[in-house]
Length: 636
Image 1 (cartoon, helix red, strand yellow):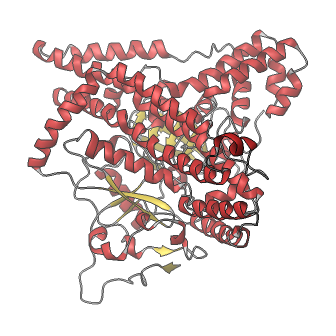
Image 2 (tube, rainbow, N blue to C red):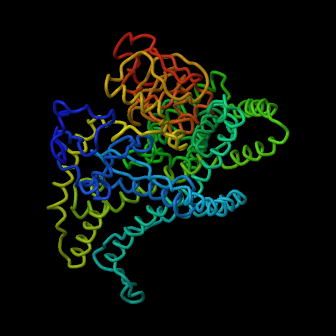
Image 3 (cartoon, one colour):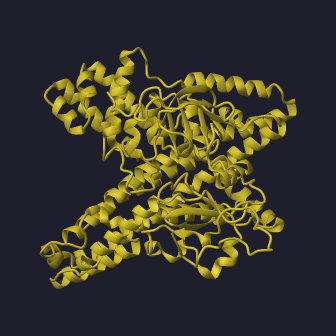
């Protein structure tokens, strides 16, 4: 291992006190062997700079593995920049949240770390509170109409990216340009179209955060009120009071269930069950009227519901259902099996709502008469805004980004055709500014009738960056950097990322003693207890290994993994709090879940018998796997 800014300290000189307990200094993190020069993959604003060492080394930096669990590709870094910009500007400049500003963001060996920007002092908070009341109050009073208008704006942005034209750079300009339009050439339009793609990719993140932080703020208001009235109440109980609300993230899975029912109604279930690829589906079904009717239903479901990333959506490499039907096809087959076994495939929404309403009635009965209006108002607002907390994820991270990544591939295909690089996917190993350089190279060469120089430059750059990416991916990043925080009390950090003082303490203990042991603790994400064999899934492309009755153990789960929830008995995640996707989805599907364990994927091995206690937030290893290869056979 080599260091970026000098050699790592070997410990305090003799006679000096040992350093304070904490996490690695970001400026002393070693570069993994083989990843030398990784810094060139990211812009200067993404990196720790020597001039800010005193300031940045004094701050605590948490790794954002909830949204960015993998190494960032150079081009994909624009989602990191955009997401944190959207959050920051919405908090700080648009709605003026009194206690919260944005986050500083840095990349270390390819991984994303964040640190909160200190809250304003009391006087500034009071000023911001007046602004917040005016701005947020307008949104809360007009939530439904403003949200409908937001949906229109975000779908317009999706269509704009989908319909963006990449000029073909034909042999001659179209004759209409000469005789009628006399406007910009295809070369000019190529650069302008790329700029428009980046513009849409930048602006979507302000749309993303416009309602999101207000949604969390309303939920936090209800949570705070509950804890004031009921000091012993836990976060899971509060979350159950706003559960049982249908959200868009469940719609893709509902489409798969509907397709399974339709296959049985049309008596083509056996053909659908036997297929593993879209080609096999078309071949097996296109010869009959019933089969063609089912294929038409499949096509109708695809737009927009199959624009669903296998991962967080933040990485181009996590293709969506629309690009790869492997998971949806298997899920439809699984649902056909369940129908034949007597399952009606109906999510227990009414049951959840009944339990929710009984829970609310129980706690309302404990309140004094004068406290009921405030409680009812806070609960009503939380339920009103809660769907958006999940819905934005389908619109932006899944539907928009699916189209965005595929449009970037269209630009890359043109550059590949002109010999600038060897594979369409190579564009993602260039920074967005470098892609513009390549486009200008092509623009100049095409205009002059010559050949671009990029073919003599980019292939070597891409080849080296692929080596660096592989070396960074093999590195084990620490969960935090810098000193131990004096306190962790920012609500979103706790609810979404699952970072608490207890979490930090577990990280420190694992850093000092390792993450071994038979019991892990985390957040009680969804109630219930389940036992089963563990299935450790580190990447989306491993989902097809999950077998019936297993317990899913993952760094973080994606909403698009929902069909897998029909096979598993419970879920465990390394990262996440009570409001993360894994917890919300598990509650809606009545699956026990423990989130935010920190080290589940490293402490648990596939095949071990484990118990997930979603009531207490513990995961216990009961026995070792009988066979290291147990459960690794292919499905059906």
